[in-house]
Length: 328
Image 1 (tube, rainbow, N blue to C red):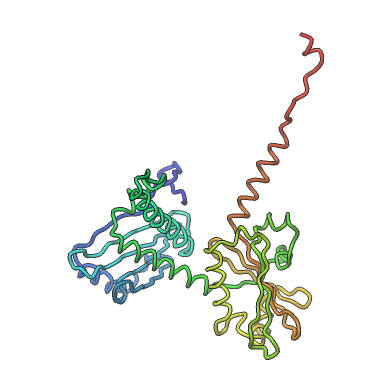
Image 2: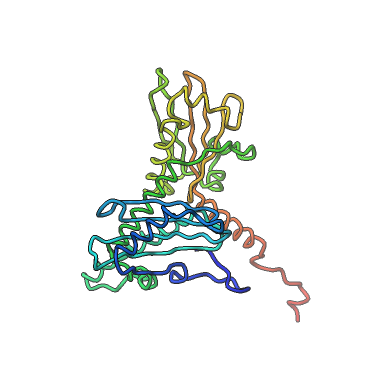
C-alpha cells in the first residue's frame, strides 16, 4: 500500500482509509451520474488524467471503472449496478497520494480483492470442517464484507480485464544502454540480482509469417501462474497487428526504434510486477527474437538480502579482547 500525508505526519493507511462505500438508492441515480460523465464537458479544473472502462457482469455495462489523477492524488472509482432495483448500485473508491498510475492502482486493488475472495472461500471450507478461521482474513473482512459477493466478483473481473488490456497494450521503449546485458543470459548471481525468470526464443520460419518459440527457465520457482498468464498476454500483444512480433517484415521495419547493438535491437516493456527486455534480430535463417522476463519483487527481495548480509558480515562474531583486560 502507498502511504499518504495528513498534516505533517506520514501514515500507512488501513483498507478503510483507502476506500469509501456509497450505496445509491436506485439504478436511476447511477444512470444519471453515468450520463453526466459523458454528456457534460470536463471543467477546466478537472483531473489531469481520466480513463473509463466498462464490463458486463450480468447485463451490458453494469460494471464501471473510472481512473482519475489530480496532481499526486490518484483514485479508482468502481461501481456495479444490480439487476434488482432494490439493491441499487454499489460503489468503491480506492486511492493513494503518490501519483500512482491506473495500472499501479488496478494491480494493487486486484491483489487485495483476489486475496480476500480466495481467503473467504478457504475460510468457508475451514469453518465447515470445524477448524479455526484463517489469520489475516478478519482485517480485510471489515472492509470487503460490506459489499455483496456479486459486486466483488464484478469488481474483480473488471480489474482483471483492465490489467490484461494494459499488458497487451504495453509500450515498448528503446532499451537503456546501461541495461544492454539484460538482453542476454547472465550467470546465476546475475539472474538472482535481476530477478530473471527465464527467456523466450523464437523465429518466424521460412515464410516470415510463422511463429516458433521455446521457453528456457532461469529461476523456475518464479514462474507462477500469474506470471504465465501475463506472459501470454504480453506475447499476444506483440503478435497483434502492428505489434513488434507480428511477422518478420513488421519486426524488421520497427527495429530502428530500438537500441542498436551489432545486428540486433533492444526494447523494454514494463508491467506492475515485471520487466520485459526484447532483443530483435532482423536476419533470415537465424533466431529472430529473445524475450527476457524479470520479476521486480524478486529484484527487491534479493537487494534486501544482500544489504542484510553485508551488515551481518561487518559485525565480528567473536570480538577480540585485549590480554590485559582478561587478566583483571
